[in-house]
Length: 277
Image (cartoon, rainbow, N blue to C red; front, top):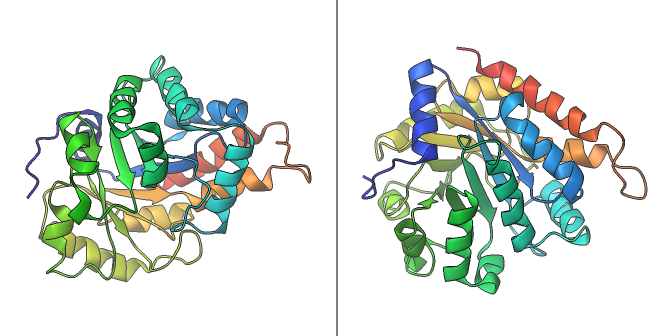
């Protein structure tokens, strides 16, 4: 079981979801995609559109676990000037109007290492970040970032996959806090659909090993997917399908069409419709 006591925004949000009798919707977008202005408009509108928790991808030039949609989003954000400092500034501005919705930064260790671990953890916490998902740091490297993050008051959320067997699970769950992120399909993001029956069995298995909420991501694209996944999981994570809406709203020169933010938020509202108790 988790050795760290959860008392922050993530724990409060999952407790509220449980009390309300419904699952949650976690939305993923790459910070700064397609540009700072449109992205901030989307970010500020997500809670009202139905996002219970928000994952922000930290733009990186080599996102090896991500599929074409999120790879392209990282490139768009970087070309528009995104960096870690601007990502944290977006979180600070979000917190001026919303002090309840949890924000998790997701991505790779390189941008954090380049920023400086101690400075990053301090600045992220002060900005209002609640947790981290760093996909390329295994539990064997906990001293590098996981333990310092926990000591700084940030949840460190770990991924479990279909190949994480019962012998490996205790290692994966050690020091994990906030929630467990179950990757429902093998491979990169956005390329396959989740099989609901397999997800339900996997969630039950994880729940035998941890009291933490289990969120399921990868391959979840529609309101029906969200509804079905949250029959067993505490939350469903939708990323590539949202990012694809951004890409579809760009012209041939990469400029966002008028109303792009509203189009993305309407899609999120449709996803959240699958969460009625």
